[in-house]
Length: 208
Image (cartoon, rainbow, N blue to C red; front, side, top):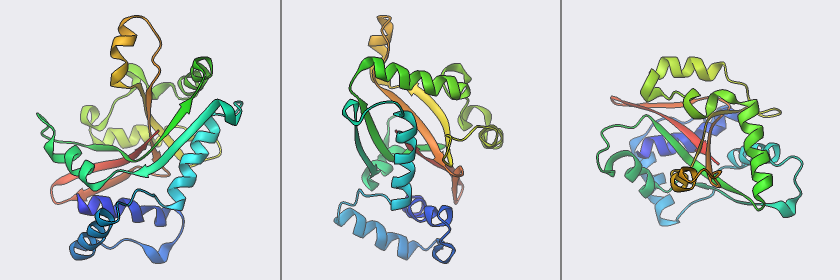
């Protein structure tokens, strides 16, 4: 858990071109960093990652005024939550994707405007929602990477959207034939970030 957490935060040095700051795995350095982040309750992601989130949001809200939406975050996934995600959940035997290592919330204040945002995603990226989406648990890591390589990036960015779905809290509303009001949009920033530690491999992605 500590290694994946540390690698993710320094991975964007590679994406941003800071080649002198590549991450070198070190259990002692990783433990020290994690201890400091827990003590200081760190939630702020890097400036590179923050810019990526805002680029995605700017694309989605194009045509809306700032009064029509609100942005919360982005924030890092706390280490305690990461441990819970990977090991503690009842009935969980394995995990292949940490889909929300960094996350933000876009609040669209008008349902009609929300429908337009949803329509934009579903129209431009038809393979990432509904029955079209196939994750690595279903099709394997190799095929998943091949599929991701063929996906279009968000215009004007290096962001690769790979999954869009209504939040699980919307099941009752959908059962009553109403449109969902809460969605999860997962993406990779520039490249699919894949970590292999011991015998465990997993992707790290981000969520809006």
